[in-house]
Image (tube, rainbow, N blue to C red; front, side):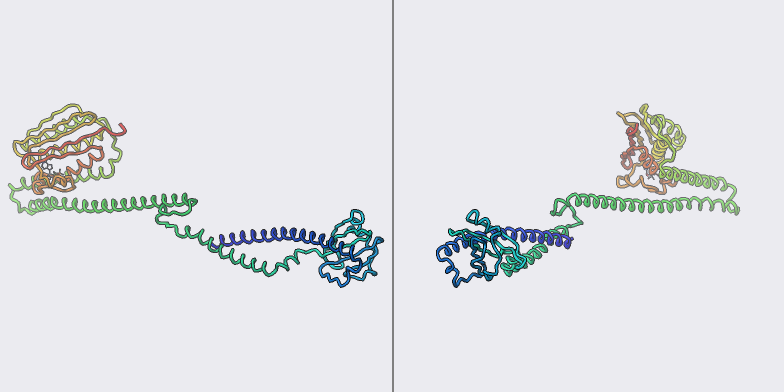
Length: 454
Ligand code: ADP
């Protein structure tokens, strides 16, 4: 680019220079020609006066270098000529300037002389005796003028050329420099040509988009890696959780099979096998629920659901279990219509109520309340059971996290109930609030705001 600009600048400089030279020459040529002509006129007048006074004697010893003086008689014969032998010369009467001088007293003309290969200016004046005095001078040609100013002019030309090349080089570098110095990493920080501002804006925009995309990609990859890690951890946990009951079952079954178990032991052993199997069934069913949730619930649709109705059904289902645990159940509130996936709403209510019974004490209470609050449907499950230590209240929603592992296992817990609640709430757009105090009890509130597309 620098080269291109340099060439263009040189071309412009040369052209302008050449044009100026030609123009100046033309003006000078015109000017010098006029000067020459005026001088010739004056010389003619002076010579005419000289001849008028001295006659032929005027020409004695005359030394004219550039001029040619001719004295022409009335009949056209040449009386005197400074250049050639006057007798040998042709009759000069027809010459234009002579004709004019004879007619008007003064005449001028110019002609090209092929013998001398030059243009001549002629000035003729009629003397008082009727003869004509004529002066001629070879007119300056452009070439002679150039030769005259030759050396000086050549020096100026060379100087001008060198100067224009130097200036062109400097200028082209100066023009290109801001472009070379553009900081492409920070396009908007550049102060250069406003002509390239749109380009820089575009560059900046694209860079920002690229950065955002890169960040998003990084985020996505981190998310993916985390999901992958959690999945592996979950699989390991599930396998571990399944292994323990299977070992127990297989142990008792072996005792019965080998006949080691006494006949009266068979029933309690079978009971243990049954309980462990139940736990496994519960675990597998929880895992299936979670994987359904992970997959986004497939084809399950949102339907008009009454939260109070769901709560009533759950209370009925859990009544027997509560009786067995010595926990009193109560249902309060009223109609709480909302849009939800019924299975998920049931899952939430069931798991919360199940926990309120499991982590309670003999003679304890559980209250389920469902009601409408403004546009929201609100569920609250309260118990006066064992409570949850403050520092673990966050963690109990994690998969397989239990405050007291042995108690949870003893009462058939899987450690997945609350993670199902959390995930289902996420799908339904509900939020969960937990309040709990060790020894006093727990209250879990789930608020279902209306869905956006309702
Ligand atoms: P689990 O199958 O063990 O009940 P959850 O995910 O339902 O698994 O609960 C996780 C842990 O949170 C439970 O093991 C228990 O320690 C604690 N927890 C849950 N609900 C209550 C509650 N209402 N009162 C006291 N502790 C609770």
